[in-house]
Image (cartoon, rainbow, N blue to C red):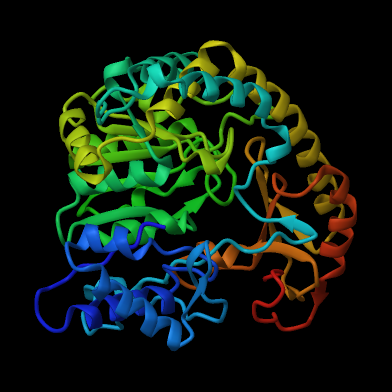
Length: 472
C-alpha cells in the first residue's frame, strides 16, 4: 500500500506519523485489511529513523487500529470507519445558483417506464461498437498528445457527410465542433454569445435544461408561446438576441414548425441581428411525412447554429454531440471548448467516426426507427381511443404528448413512470397533459403499462402531487 505521509518538521515526528496514519484509517483511505509498508521502507521514504516509525506503528497497534502478523507485516485492523468529508465551509455560490434546482441522481427504472428522451439500449449494436472502440484503444491510437478542441477530424468529416445526406445541413468538417452532448453545445454557444443581462428567448413549453443553462449564464430568459405551427414569432421580445428552438420535433409537444413560421423566424433574426440555436435532438426517428428542411439549410445570412446529439440515436452514456456553426463563430466556439475541457475522449470519437463511415449508424437508425414506429403506433391508438386524452399529432421522436380533457387528472400508480406536461412550462400551464416516452420501456411491457396508465386517469378528482412517478 502506498501510504502518503508528509512531515512538517514541527513537533514530535512519531506523533506526526501516528496522526496522519490514523486520519487515513478513519476516513477510509486505508481500508481494513490493507498492508502498511514495513517500518524500514517508510522510514527511508520519510528520511527519518526506523525507530520513529516503529513507535507510531506500536501506538496504533496498542490503540487497536493496526494489527501485526508475524512474518506477514502490519495491517489495518477490521472495524467501522467513517467516510471522509470536506469541511462544510461558509463560501456560497452566486445568487443565480441558489435559485436553480440542485442536480438530481437518475431515477430508478420503473416497471412501466414511460420517461422521456431515453432510447432503448437493447437496440444499440453493442458488439459492433465494442469492436470499434477496442480497435481505437490500441496503444498506437492513444499515445499522442492533446487533440484539436473542435474534436477528432475524422468524426467531424463523418458528421458533416451524415447530416448533409440525412438532414440537408450545409456543412464541412471545419464547421463542425464535437461536444459532450447537446447540453455542452448550448453551453458553448451561450458562453460565446450571451452578455450578462441579455435576453434569450425559448419555447414555452420547452426544454428545461436549456432554459436553466441560459439563466445560469446571466441571461434574462423569456418564454415564447408555441402553437400548432411552432414558436409564435410575433411574440418574440424585440430585445432578444438569441432564440432557442426545436423546429423539427418541438419539445415536448412534438409538432414540427411550419414552413411559413420557419421563414418568419429567419426573417426576424435577420432584422434583429439575432442568432437562432436549432436543436435537432431526435428527428432521425421519423415515421411518416417528408421531413422539412432544417433552419440551417434555409439560412442564407449565417445566423443559425445547428445542434445535434447521439444521446437519443445511440446511448446517453456515450456523451457525444456536435454543433454546426457559421464560420464567424467557429474560432470563438473552439476557444470556449478548449477552456471548458480541452476536448472529449478521442478514442471514442474515432470509433464513432468509423461507426458512421461503415454505415452502422444509418443501419441502426433504420432498425430503431421501425421499432419506435411500432411503439408509437400502439400508444397513439390507445391514447386516441380514450376520450380522456387528446394526442398531439407527431410523426417522429421518442415520445408522444397527450393533453388531458378538462377535469381529468392522473393518480399515482405504483410501478408507473410518466411525465407531466406542466414540468416543461416555466409558468402556469394553460392545461394539463402527459408526455409519454416509449424508448425506456420494453416493447412487451407497453400494453400492460398502457392499461395501468389509463387506469390512473380520474375524472373530477383534483390532481395529486408527485408521488410514484405518475404526474398530472
